[in-house]
Length: 189
Ligand code: IMP
Image (cartoon, rainbow, N blue to C red; front, side, top):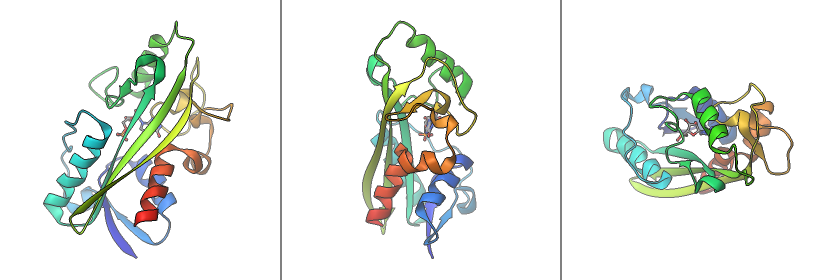
């Protein structure tokens, strides 16, 4: 089994990613390698932030590792919240406030097209590669479902009439931005 550090402390993400990666990999968490501080996300794009996080881990541990950064890009909001998705409404990761703000911002908008985009930076033997995964969809007019996290109760993937929060983890993983980015990661691993 290959060991690889996943630069996250988010338990949801960890279980989503390990489900897609399968049995061939043992995912090591930040805590397990002694990184307990928040890694600064100072990049202006998802690509930059994924890279910053992966390099941070590699520089401190020398271990093979990967980091992801995800944003919800809403067409009528010119790609917002994008790289600011976690802190859209407040300084913290307040999912309810973020969803409320998104609904407010789209109140008078007919175009509710949006996409989730995940960028993963992988560093192996000191060499960095990036892959991405995208899922297109629309933003619903009200919240539905209790699964998942973040903007899941508002995001309806294209071809479905349910939000991500109304899907099982397996169903979401099969079509999600992160699922697709991890599938692309597995291809190059
Ligand atoms: P991160 O870069 O993966 O931490 O994601 C930034 C923010 O995007 C999170 O705080 C969530 O608000 C949102 N987000 C990321 N992935 C998902 C997802 O799979 N569903 C819903 N929201 C997500």
